[in-house]
Image (cartoon, one colour):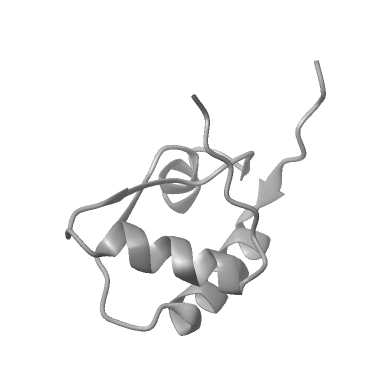
Length: 77
């Protein structure tokens, strides 16, 4: 099993700031999981970002923004 890198709060918040400028329209994204715990000082780092999107166009807008940021989109089946 490959060990996954952990990301600290500063790195993730900087990426979220970049994401906020990359999304082209208002989008509701809720942060859950490890990042939420980091924001409440319950965790120092996380290996991923768990999000919930609610609007019918929001998932598409999020994916488009992440692709513009050069993130690779993996589809797990």
